Structures are given as C-alpha cells and as structure tokens.
Image 1 (cartoon, rainbow, N blue to C red):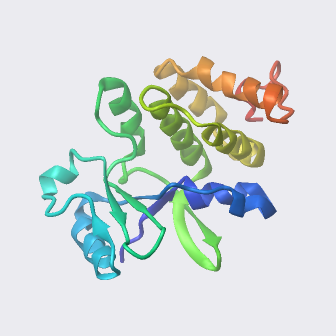
Image 2 (image 1 turned 60 degrees about the horizontal axis):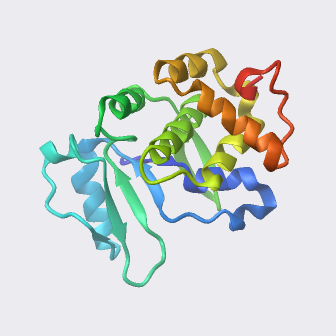
Length: 203
C-alpha cells in the first residue's frame, strides 16, 4: 500500500517519443509521505540498495529533502524525497509548500508496462519549473531541464491551468525567467511557440 509519486525522469522520457532512450537521468526521483519512510527504506535495502544516510528519525524526515539510494551492481540511482523542493530559504520554502503530499492531485501513467503514479499535468509542470529554478540559483541549470519544460508545455499545454501557473510564478518573481525559457526554445532549440499572444505558451 505504498504509492510513491514519480517525478521528472522517466515521466519526462515519454515526451521524447522514439528518442526516449536518449533522455538519460542521473537519478530517478520519487516523493513519499514521511510516514512511509521506514517501509520504503526496508524495501530498497532488501533489494540491495544502500542509502547515503541511515537511521533517519521521523523528525528528520520533516527537515531532510531527500536520501540517495545506490546499488553496488546496478546503475539506477534513486532519490527518495520527503519533500519536493526543500526549505533552505524562504523562496524555496514557498515553492515547496505547493507540493504537500496531502493536497497534491495525481494521475497514473504506464512506463514499460508498469503503472506508476505521478502528479497531474499542472502540478508536474510547476514542479519541473521549480526544480529548474532551484538549480539555476544553486549549482546551475542544464539545457535538458529547459527542454523537458518546453516539451511538457508543447504536449500538455491545453490541459494546464494557465492562470494558476502564471499567478504562482509571479508570487516567486519567476514569470520573466520562465518566459525566457520559451524564447530560448524558439531561438535555439527548434520550437515554434507563438510568444506574443500566448503567455508561457500554455494555450
């Protein structure tokens, strides 16, 4: 009865169609409720995975963002998230509060014949943006992250709650930089969004 929320990674791979295997991931992210940690840890360690932190208390799951699990014989790395973005500063905390596991809405997708649970399109799109912004202000933003955002907008733009997304982006002063992602897509990456009439190209 544990249903982790799968983020980015293998969800975004589906956007690349027949080229999906060219969209590599450094790790795969899953988001769990903190009360599921002990059971998830037991499942992963029984399967041979080793955590970079052990003996985490319930209180620490309220503070830590993630624990990384690696396997000595397998290339798959799993980032087990207790929260989506983190609490390092007020800006990140505000974004993080948008992804409370008690209030999120979900959808199921099938990857290689396996049903997995992920966020609905609006929340997953917002997560991709917030994750990119977190990287942009810390360790750097990769072009693959921008392409994931652009492909997601292209594939699911009509299903996204555009007004909600724009409101939230303006709350964190991120609307302009996200608009720049779409300009980059048109200018350098072969996209053809109509920028003048479609803010963030979500129509």
